[in-house]
Length: 107
Image (cartoon, rainbow, N blue to C red; front, side, top):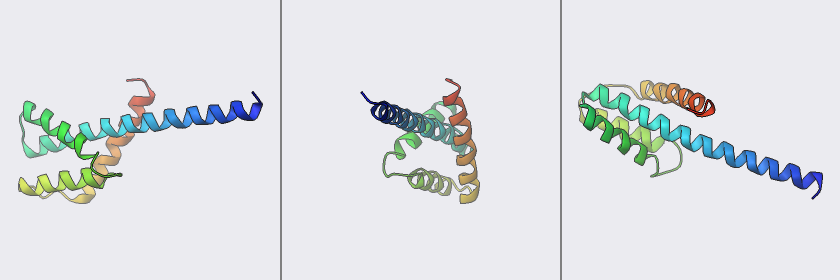
């Protein structure tokens, strides 16, 4: 193998690892976001855990975060809560940063 081939394999490996870590971080973020939203809606622990799982599943509907945001905002509205989209997006960003740090730390 040439040095170029070795570098190409190394870059491919790093890309695959980065994508896997980003997927795990997004799932972790969505679970935490679901628990946060459940607390805002006053759900009990069992219901909160189920709701968090539903938020994680919602992320598989479409690429990107809009499906998760749409679910949370719709559920807040149905619960009679007036939490802004900006507040939810801010919480999503905060939790994503935390999830990435945890994944990198091997937690």
